[in-house]
Amino acid sequence: MPPESKSSLADRIGKPIKHMNPLLKEFRDFAMRGNVIDLAVGVIIGAAFGKIIDSLVTNVVMPPLSILTGDIDLSDRVIILSRQSYPNLAAARAAHAPMITYGIFLNAVLSFLIVSFTIFICVRTINKLHRKPEAPPAPPKKDCPFCLSSIPLQATRCPQCTSALEPAALPGSKP
Image (cartoon, rainbow, N blue to C red; front, top):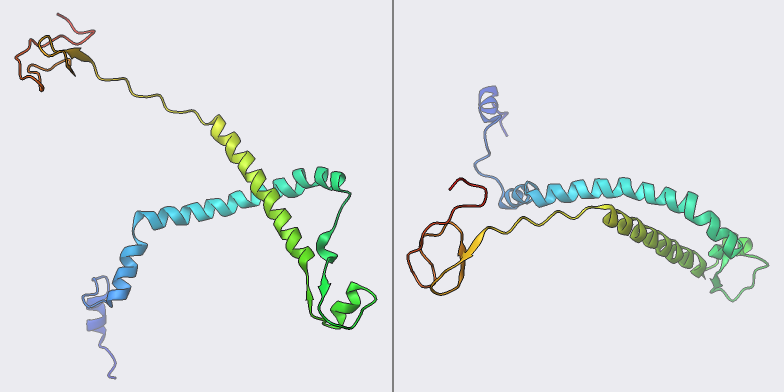
């Protein structure tokens, strides 16, 4: 391939690519939508919030739980699939014996349950502290004297029965 001249390369810098691969164009359109940016921000904030929750669980929730459970460690619970017997778990691991380490799985499940319950309590508390916005006041209404339907206060004709009406003064305005 002949090297590109500097002028042709300089001419294309900063200009949109006219013949972009359709897959790349679709990806660019997808990546620039607002939802993707919002999702990225949410993931970053979620990671930071995850560190807070991890610290809360490790330093605040787990110490009282370890007192209540007596420091139970399930990570040593295994099913050794080998027919050979081993004096202890360390010997089985040293021999690379096939084993199902269900205790580590149970630890992960318990950790997930504790973390998810802690997140639930935090989010529930935050939601209770969050004030609900006040509902906007209802627009002023009046009743049509002919058909008795509710219509805007400033209406000069009823949209239901088309009767001509006198415009009413808004509350607080000069008569």
